[in-house]
Image (cartoon, one colour):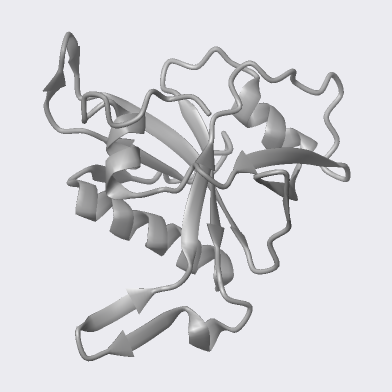
Length: 166
């Protein structure tokens, strides 16, 4: 349920950004969701990104970054072992530990809890002999908050919203 909520959370952010969301029939390439801007950005028509979405209910922060050990080496390589024709990102949705806390209803509406973050692993070194039994640590800056504006910037649908690194 936690992973499903994380994907749904990200879909809500994409809807608020006006992006199209797609999901492949099979997860054979380590991609959970894709996002596409409907239209042109400069010389590019319909820019897109693909993401792997992870959820986490017990986050650990060190030195301004989440220290995440939830990717196995095969998953990690599917995010770094490019180059890819469509950029790939890792999205980390921090969720409450209790499912009943995922949403909160108040007089002004429903709130989704808690927050999502992103990182670009381009330029990282792939694991030479990846093993699903070994975890790969990644750092996700706490400043990389996923919002409609930053998601548009990642996709390329908002000039200057986000430069795609960091």
